[in-house]
Structure formats: structure tokens, C-alpha cells
Image (cartoon, rainbow, N blue to C red; front, side, top):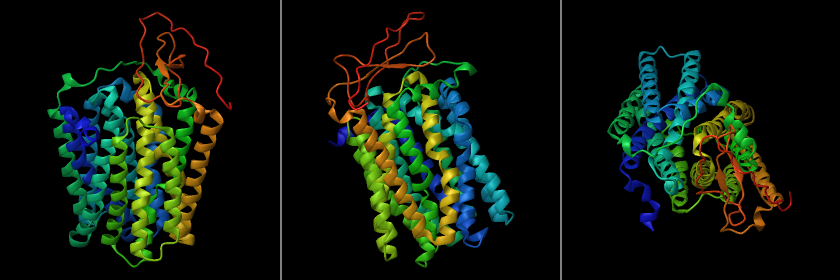
Length: 457
């Protein structure tokens, strides 16, 4: 059982990547915690709205640059691209640390750095997400995505708590410098990888194909539904820095209490990621159930009577949100044509992170005006809505009635700009995970299959 859960770690390149990403993610979570605390307590007088603006500036670029970043992730060597983005993030972290230690940091400067971090991250995220599929074979892709999430949440368990202690002991500036040092682990991992063992992938170039990812998703209603659900959760539900920091202040806690709350989220997140790693395939129904669980957990947080009770609800919150997002990510990766995977993942990450500029200022303003519990209640309502959208579409599309063992096959038509989904008589189902596109010789056109009518369509 454990062998199945950690099977991707038997691959050298993925094992090196996992270790480097874990160290780097610890530093990233430390910086995120310190940045939010600086804005809330040092640059403003507990202004949650200012934190919302900072988050909006940092997460807007992935949405605004989605076409370019996705095309770059598909067009260029992802390993070298990640080296460039990680180096840029290292330099930004050093600059932030120096400005804070020298006392020169201001709120407008922090807004500028948040925007710069967002621009670099806009190129880094789709490349890193798609690069996971370059490290392992198709049948291990879902497991690798889940283990990636486990690494991310192991870091989330350590990083915020460590940042909280460091802020109390030595101040926020040193947290940014420690984060800069952790980027070296990721760069070292990328250097020692064996490029000849990476999974070969097809490439398409040309500015005219930037919109291929959009057209591909538009013809996949299952992906559209997942993207809508992820947008709602990302915009209004996943504003944990705002929720945790303002609730920590409400319970009379400081930076260490804020960091500890983030670690409680990570406990549940890690459990959700490891459970996802055990699953053979990523299923849409798990995304729906996870979003419903997130709504329930948020509702419990609203009525938490004490700091300890609120921390306990965050364990369930973390479990549900990572179950939802890890499964959604794995579903997108394993059911998307590899030729377009970078562009589709860029769109996925843009929707997930790009929802923050929409929701974070609203959530921050609600928390500042009416208190954090009302803001968390808003997140719960939106999460229930996302769950309802997914459940309604699943029922109306007839997926509940299709046989579990049948599959879609993705076929690639080289004469058209995007891949098409062609159902086969023996290969039709409610899940398309684990399929592999079948390329045709240049100039040969794929036969068009007429899809069977869907139940309830």
C-alpha cells in the first residue's frame, strides 16, 4: 500500500525534484506568512483590506498573463525556465529582506514587490505544474501530482510556524533572507537532474496558437465545470492569510499564534494530499465532495468559541481544500492533451490564483468592516455554491449512469489547432483520467466520431 502511495519517488528525477521543492516550499511559506504579518501589523494598523490589496496584486498577473505564460511553458525547456523564475524569486526575496532590515519598507513598496512576485510566479507556476508530467510516465502522473501537493503541505506545516517564531525572535526581515537561501535547494535539484530521462513531449509554437488552450477547454464541459468551481473557491474561500491573521488577533494572539494556525491547516492538507496519492485516478466526484466538505468546515469555523476550537476546524478545512485542489489538478493533467498541457495548466492556475484579485479585497473589506467570522461565512456560502454547481452538472450530464470501467480516448488531429475528444464504443465513461493521446502522421486527418447523446443533456 505504501509502495503504491510513494511509487513516483522510485524515479530519480522526481525524487530529486521532490526534495528540492520541499525545501523551497518551506521558505516560500515562511515568506508568505511574514509578508502578510508585515502588511497587517507593521505597515498598517491591523488593516485587513490592505492585506487583501496585497494579495490581489500578487495574484493578478497569473490571470492577466495566462495566454503568454501557458505558451511559454509549452514552447520552451521547462527545466531551464524554472531555473530562471526561481533565480528571479531569490533576488526579490533578498531585496525584501534588506529593505525590511534597513527600515526602508513602505506599504507602496510592498505593493510593488507583491506585483513583481506575481509576474514571476505567473511564469513559474504553469511551468512547475506541467514539469511534473515531464518527470514521470503518464500512469504515474496523478500520483506525482498528489505527492507534489504533499510536499507543498509538508512545507506548509513547517514554514508558517517557523516564520512565526522567527518574527518574534529576530524580526521579519530575516525570514525573507532565509527564504532566499532555500531557493538554492530547488536550483541544485534542477542542475543534478538527468535531462535524458525526462519524458519526451510534443511542442507547438507560434503566436497564432496562444488561444489553443482556451478553445480546448471550451470544448471540454467537464473542465469548464472544474474551472468554475476552482475559481469560486480560489476567489472567496482560500483567503487563509486574511482569515487566520484576523482570527488570531480576535483571540488575542500574535505572530506566533498566526503561524501556528497556518500549520493546523497544513496538518489536514498533508493528510488530504497523501490520501489523494493512494488513488488510482483523479475523479470529478471527489472534487465535488471536497468542495462540500470545505463549505461545512468553514461553517464550523464561523462558530468556533475559542482559539483551540478554531484551530481544530482548520485541520478539516485543510483536508477538504487540498483534496479538492489536488484532485482537480490531477484530473486536468491526466485528461489533457500533452501538446496543450502547459497552456491548459496556465489557464487552471490563472483561474485558481487569479480569483484572488477578485475575492481577496472583498473578503478583506468584509473582515475589516464586520469581523472575520462574517468573512468566513461568505467563504462557506460560496463553497456551497461551487459544490452545487458541480453536483448539478454531474447529474444533468448523465455521468452518474455511465459504467465506471469505460474511458474516453483523446485523439489528436494534426490538421486542427486543438485536440478533440472522441468517444469509442468500448471506451466511454464518466472519467477520462489515465488516457493517452494518439498522434497521427503529419497531414493525416483524424476521423470524426459522432458522440453518443448524453443522459440528461
